[in-house]
Image 1 (cartoon, one colour):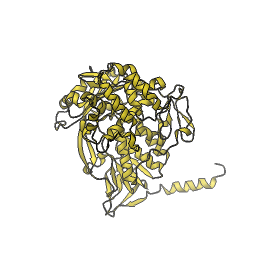
Image 2 (cartoon, rainbow, N blue to C red):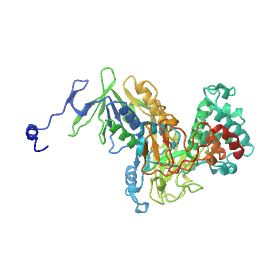
Image 3 (cartoon, one colour):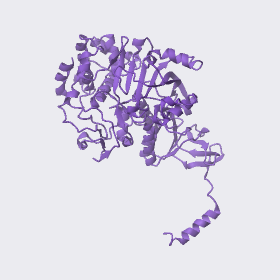
Length: 572
């Protein structure tokens, strides 16, 4: 090629003599001109590389939109990033980490720690977009809840269900009736409603129908439905039933726990969706300060001014802008405050000494207006060196003095969770406002996400993503664009079976517990786990594919309906 391309070489020399091509100039609505930033023209510009923004970026890119994704930080993840130990100490201006804590690179500490529900919407988004092939997940070992001053494990086996003090012996019969009702309930089948209109009947009224005690209500509402306060009791009961079904479906997938967590921290999630967007032509620019968002004469966003490669102002034009609320504080309102403590420990925090766990402290048990959540991960999820644990305690607060004396205020607000940690090697306090946009964005083409809440799971986060999508497109995001279960061949190893029937290998997936007939019919929590009545084994049907453990798939169990009698006879 070189020998036969002398003319091309001559033209290259001529181009070099002429110097670099001057950048394209773009005119702003006020008549001024600036050099183009990157390609200059885009369909959508996204500000911030948090999880929500990266999911939207990936979906838009797959849909054929030309996307420019920018972040003022020099790392992916924004408020949902994972940082190493040095970055954590730097963030809180705490100097150099002690050598006793181990290597900084062995830590992946989440700034917004949350678990994934195994059958939740975020997992369905991962499968729908194919992003799951960039990630590795492992089950969370245990879930606990506080009752009467004692930490109790949320039961997941028949033995645990029979011995748990969370539900009294005589109360189990009433709980059984409630469980059976929720299990059978289907919105489009009035015969399963038993005369109750759950769009009008409140959650409290539904509990009263079954005569459940206050302690049982706390267990259902906070440990299964995962509400962070008792506000839900005055709301229609349909959402309560849906949340219980979600918990049950998630627990039924692998047993032992309904929660999943990615290896190497949650910062892997936004990076995985960023890879998806890049594959479909998305452009990413980190460490780019946003000078201002530009609006046209009609008040609609039409671009952003940032810094070009030469360090001078540059402009990128677009039709729509998406961003996290930290880029649009003047267009957002503070709805709540979240206070939290991040701690490094040398020991587990649960009675069962699990390597990863969640502890829920219901508001009524600790005399607060909101629940306190305690989150813990370790080297089993590649979040810390061997022998070290990372714990986070968080809750919603209304205190006004957080900025003045954060340590004292946080200790007072989180005291019930902090005392569960025991001796800590290092700890940091933080707080932030939960911001929500004051408008839906359609009028000014500026679509803003919400801040992350204090809950320990991603369901509200995915609801916000779906809300963003609907505001952008004017139609809901369809998570059922899938192939039926019958068209997906089971794979005995750790693979994802895609819609075209190809098994995509994973590098390594820590094996969840084998799910078989015996495990499926074990205990009260497992009874709740089969609320949906639609699980198959070894996994429940997903919209776009299946996740499998790395053990050989056991034989499918009988249909869920045939399990009910033995299930409740065994556990109740």
